[in-house]
Image 1 (spheres, rainbow over the protein chains, first blue to last red):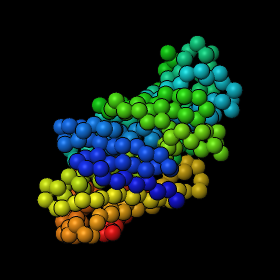
Image 2 (cartoon, each protein chain N blue to C red):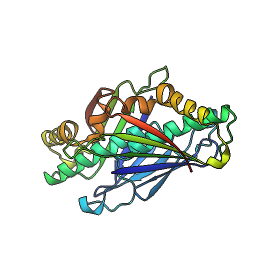
Image 3 (cartoon, each protein chain N blue to C red):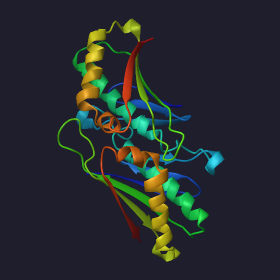
Image 4 (cartoon, chains in turn cyan, blue):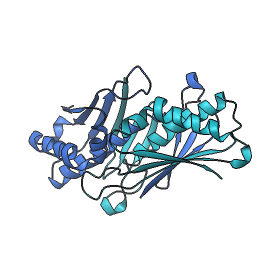
Length: 137
Length: 137
């Protein structure tokens, strides 16, 4: 079983405990916080980026693809009305073109993550469509 | 628009950037990581705990309820098959009984968060049922 906790630290700050690690969460000054850490909502996107990122790097390394640099960006707009939710999530998988990766393998790794392995993607897709693109920098 | 990024740091580690703050993500040793930070999947639960926690503390303070200590725990099991997703999320809102809070107001604040304000709850509920309980310690 997974368990996390978030202990209130005064004003809008909470200290999260997750798997023996701590993360301070806070709100912006505009809503009474002091920006001591990230706001909670985009952590859902960090969870998504990290989950699919770990899948993709694991699969590409098993394929012996020579990845030297890899970055996952996740973007979304929010609805205007409460409860404010993500409207359209885009995952941008960025690699270095100079590494000479096989694009076919990169796309295979991403599709394995998106369609089979990434539990965070599977959950979020039930609320919000997820698109992706691959970029070689 | 929200944007987060996760840059690969070697092995299974990724450094997330979210709203000007950094979070190191990593995997357990058993799957090739070094436990330098939380794994990505439970961050979805941290996002949920923080989002509803900030709603509830804001509402209770507007109600002038005398909260001195507040903790939000979130628990869930995972499915056994890929993609591994949460099966049944429970949010436990913990307060100090000695504060003399009005239970009716505490429950009203939680229901406002769960039914109206918490965007993370609204998204996750589409994938997984969310229950809650209130505990006075």
